[in-house]
Image 1 (cartoon, rainbow, N blue to C red):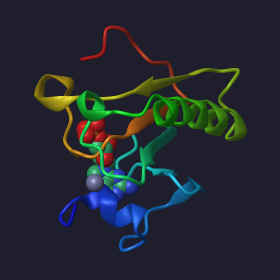
Image 2: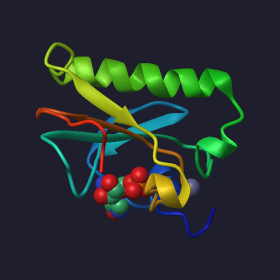
Image 3: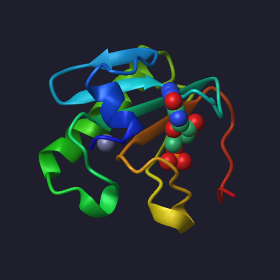
Length: 112
Ligand code: 5GP
Ligand code: ZN
């Protein structure tokens, strides 16, 4: 996708603060962190949001990568939250699938 911000990150055209990369996934720090830990895990392939996720193995690797990074960065015990925002009511603003990983402060439920 030519005009997709996260595709540009996946291709290296824009360089975020990367915490993990492999052939199919990229994880980087959110530019406006909502918690001491705020990482986004994305597939390098353009998928607009959870409605369009067509690969169960990829979805599993996204989730496992989020958990592994949370652990490696020191948040497994204290805890963390993972979130996919989808479309308008979900609060999605960037239309390339991304899994938020938030930690380092007390989260509240229900979210606003
Ligand atoms: P959404 O609201 O779509 O679930 O989340 C999009 C996230 O992308 C937001 O938390 C926002 O701060 C983050 N974001 C938007 N633009 C950039 C950017 O240029 N760099 C980084 N690292 N994060 C961004
Ligand atoms: Zn994209």
